[in-house]
Image 1 (tube, helix red, strand yellow):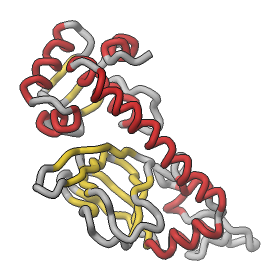
Image 2 (cartoon, rainbow, N blue to C red):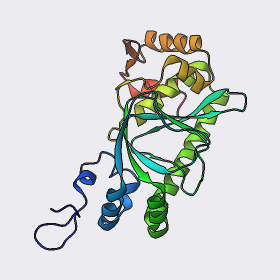
Image 3 (cartoon, one colour):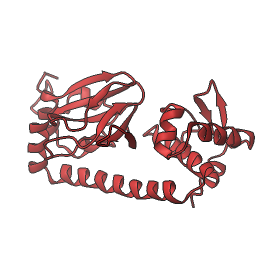
Image 4 (cartoon, rainbow, N blue to C red):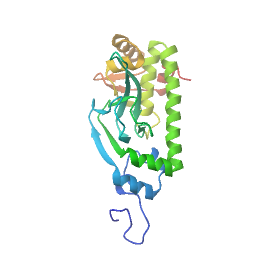
Length: 243
């Protein structure tokens, strides 16, 4: 196969090798693209590894590119006029980061763990959105999914007890940390206790207390303060108050 994605025999096009091996391709927005579109996108894309704590884009910065999360977790936060900051969401592979047609980012996106992303120039994505209805539909689906999850999180923050909030956070991680697994029974916490408290609207002490309570009840097992095991998904779901 040559660098343009053509097979040696004949003129049939194949997706670029890097796209074939991409962890996020089949579940992400790229799954809707034709081979021609993948080849075009691949010409302009750039894989980038980001370390935990590294900022992808800051609130108010001009949007020059979008990206797919290939692995790892990215936290989204919003800063108020007085400097206070609130974590408002988490994104996982194979989520698409960015809002097409916006000039400036309304949020700060920062790696919560070591991660890898695939960067696309804004102009290329905006053109594909106009030319590929299925791609635009996939972006719309993700936006609606994020809206549904935000509404569920409003319920968590507004009505659930402290234990239900912490259990809901753990359930969120278990069901999103691995795009190939509906429920991951073992995982490392992607956020510090302070960030978890910020995300849940609790104090650090309350988060630690509820983690200890869930551990003593046998709902979770914690090792080295960050590694969590969940013996039974059902018990964690019940502790989170999820139907």
